[in-house]
Amino acid sequence: GIGRRKPAAQRRSTGKSKKAPENNVPPQRGGFRRAISASSLSATSAQAPAPSNAKAYENVVIADALRDHTRDKCRAFINSLKGIMIGSDPESKEVMDRLTFSLSMENGFFWDDAYASDALDDMARSDIFKSVLTKLQGLVSCHPDEVEPKSKEARRRLTFFVNSLFMDMPNAPSIHDMFSWNVLTPYYKESVTLNKAELETRSDALGVSTMLYLQTLFKADWANFLERMGLQDEEKVWSKKFVDETRQWASIRAQTLNRTVSGMMYFEKALRLLANLERLDDDTTNDLMGEKFGYIVSCQVYGQMKKDQDSKADDIDKLMHRYPHLRIAYIDSVRLNRSGDMAFYSCLVKSDGNGKIQEIYRVRLPGNPVLGEGKPENQNHAMIFTRGEFVQTIDMNQEGYFEEALKMRNALQEFAKRDGPMPTTILGLREHIFTGSVSSLANYMALQETSFVTLGQRVLTK
Image (cartoon, rainbow, N blue to C red; front, side, top):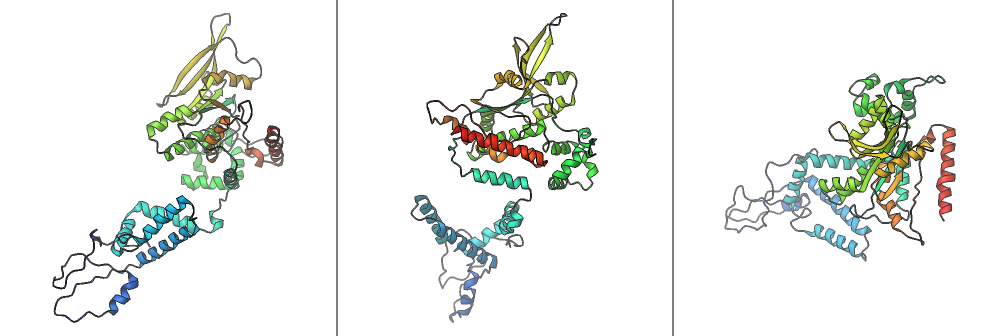
């Protein structure tokens, strides 16, 4: 009814207390008009005025069916809320008292007809209120089957998140008091962001391109992507306007560095949301982001990629420009003389915010840091650039979720607990193998990971 309501040209209420006029006072045109509800309209019309030579006070009846219908619905809703509350609880009792007071206010929405009609008129004029009301009506009036997400992945994530809220976990401190941590990811030469050639190249075995495989595996997501981009012809996805979005869509559904970085940077978005809920201003929030969270990707051969003008280096630069708090650590080698002596440096770079890459630190090493296996040595040389109280190590083929990032404050509080003589130094978190849906073999390997790693660690811990 709000969308079709036509607000009155003038307000019905004046904000002054009502006072019945004396019999010897003539009626005033344009003064306060008494408003009565539609339920008392029949009773008012049935009363005949007493015969008198004096002019009677002019009653103007305001019939508003939407107002009366809204009142009835609101009264029933408030009474239902009062019915489910526990009266013995002090907080519930305070809320019940406030609800009772709102129902009994003489000049409030439930008893002042003119004020209630004007309030509905104000709502009808507000585009924001009508937009919110339309979305709210859509949420509460949908069939349960329509509300449930169609995507299996969305249902899995929502189910896991809701079930995890009932587990025994530490209380979350404020943003100011939480522990700080850095995320460290080792990277060598894996794919960063899939380009058009990689996506459209057909394999020799099946003759299926990577793009066609992803479109088939994520059919609903691809249809949503085309709708979001406003595309009717799929051939236009490789136009200059949409090519970056298409590459991003495919990359976050494959085993790429882009997927890992995008998932880990959800930690920053989650912290910003929590800071907003704590009513922190933007300057304070920006300062806390650099203090409480940092993400370092140890790209061992990033310097060599830049020298060779590799496209993967350009894709890494785009990730730094997209996420200002992302840092890239790499090993740089410089030839000292003709005899071949080399100097090795651990370097850290970031985006300067103006489209260029800025070097922050350059630390000279006593020699080649890669002495044993490449992956641990790649992590070790970048460890000096971490600034948090704790370090979270994430492999290149992992990802993160926003809803799980909201619980990171609680997870870090595990280090504050001390069950035995020694403090907690290592915290293991379960890993979801997102490639488990690719094939039967991949599903078997994912189940093996869950059985022998996640469940095994929990048993051995106890």
